[in-house]
Image 1 (spheres, rainbow, N blue to C red):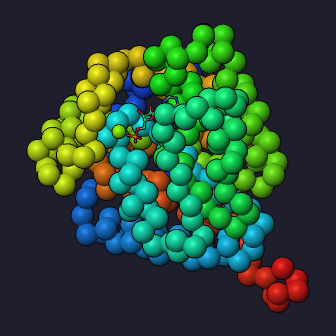
Image 2 (image 1 turned 45 degrees about the horizontal axis):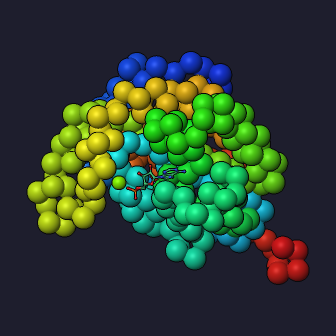
Length: 263
Ligand code: AMP
Ligand code: MG
């Protein structure tokens, strides 16, 4: 299956999340065959990343967004498990510090963009500036409203400078989030992940849904597409994301430089 085509949000399409099933398995079953398919994709990603690194012609930026417990950390751990850490960077975006707040909202983002040859992963991103910021009214409405176009322009500029951007929305159901919160609360190895604010944020589920719908409807472009990943099943999430990354890198048609001189 062509996962990219199946899960990509077409540009300018009005998205209603209720129409997307977070527990969709796309016709697959979690069996030995799927495990083999995932392992094969992870191996292929390692080869593709090595080529990307050798060529140094382009960078790949992977943006991960989703509600709390949607699986951003888990995705990074599984999907990137095969690639060389040398060619990969991960940046988690938290509440901006005072220096970051003294700049425009894209300042800290631009500094973290991967260089040519690298895969960069964003755990949260500039989209927080139209998500948490919108939901909590951290800036006036006219400020966050202008940001969708600003983001599109910024991403187009990156694309024109050889940064390929893939944006994944990890779509989970409210029930699945509750289940994962309960696990976090009761598993001593997971408890640290639960923060008091998570419960408060959960009450704002619908507001976040509306904010995500605006992002997906306005900021999925040909040059930086969004993908809605059904994420209630972690195995399907991992398979879908790793396949989309592999499909994108395959399209680059990369070759090893012949000699150091010609690179
Ligand atoms: P976590 O990903 O669980 O470590 O939490 C990071 C927190 O930082 C989340 O609650 C985000 O909503 C918050 N955060 C990230 N970016 C921003 C931003 N630009 N403005 C306000 N809060 C943010
Ligand atoms: Mg959290």
